[in-house]
Image (tube, rainbow, N blue to C red):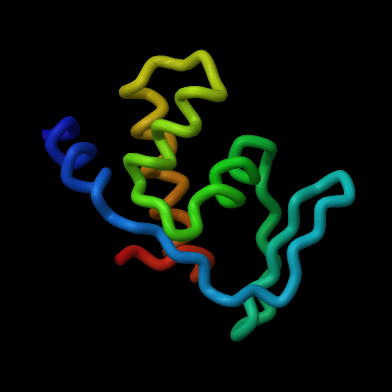
Amino acid sequence: MEDYVIDVMKSVVLEKPKVQKIREDGEFLVVRDNNKKIVILNVTGKEIYKICGGLSIGEVISKMKSEYDVEAKKLSIDVLNFVRDMERKGLLVLR
């Protein structure tokens, strides 16, 4: 079932809604325009967030795979979990 979900989600395109500010001085902070909520991302989250606008989840996974030496299924699960978390926080929109 998990593999099926990963395969289905790979075609979903990610969009970044308007954010008020992105700051990169030591930490990667994103402030959502409508609720002024601050989200701090770790290094990997920062890399995913920076590349995800307009790409499908599958394309994001492929780009991350070319950057990091990690097993494909683990990477896919990690990216999907990140995307779900960012969607809940209003920082990504799934299309």
